Length: 317
Ligand code: TXA
Ligand code: MG
Image (cartoon, rainbow, N blue to C red):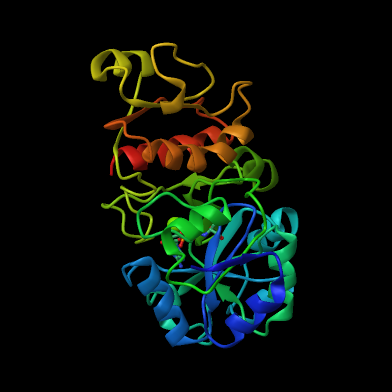
């Protein structure tokens, strides 16, 4: 199994020799490797069982370092990075040819972000290359938010998990790109639309589906537990599927369902807390012996949009 430790020095050595290390970020744990080495990047795809058409995000220690990997940076991207980095925002920017094709699946843009996690930023500062890092889960499954989640699924395939505790945002970064001068949101995530629009004005949301190939990896069915998940009116679903189902409730406990098979995202109705709990609770319910998971949408604003997006994709699995 992988060693789990908060010491960054072994992580530095492994990464310098082309090995993969799981790293903590504020969103979810990443499966990181030297983004400039083709053989290392290929290993990321193979450990995750991820198709090569799904591009990777690179992680940098600060804004200034992105000049090394990009051809140009639009003014709006500068404004956003200044405001929200380090943080849960990924910018799709025109890449230069230092970045291997494998990282971007041949696309002309590269996804870049500066994660808001002390240990990982220390790590990034100590390395002479950026880290390519998708979420550290097998392709299509729920993203990991603790070292144990990573160990459970990838522990036999990687040497080291850098322990940075539980992820404080809990949901992946918001991904934005540019269509001309128009800012486009391609993935809803840990930075809410409201916060983005406060800074940059109205944005266009173009979420990926299998019929919209702009971002090939943002597949319709994703973030899915192994069990079937149904999303809808929870009481109606429980009435239909029986109380042996596992239940993910927004804030109100359902008395018909046993506590061991039930999780409440946020008893106080706090959407940030719900986002932080989402993936861990889905994993826990996936591990019960219930035949199916029933879930209800949360309010559709702020981080609720990203939570509902993940629940819909999980339900499409
Ligand atoms: O919060 C996060 O973003 C986490 C942490 C580890 O940083 N990373 C993450 O990576 O969620 P991943 O690979 O699981 O999801 C990144 C998504 C993929 O769906 C991919 O298709 C999309 O970003 N993506 C990456 N580069 C892209 C590009 N150049 N154009 C369009 N989509 C891109
Ligand atoms: Mg992922």
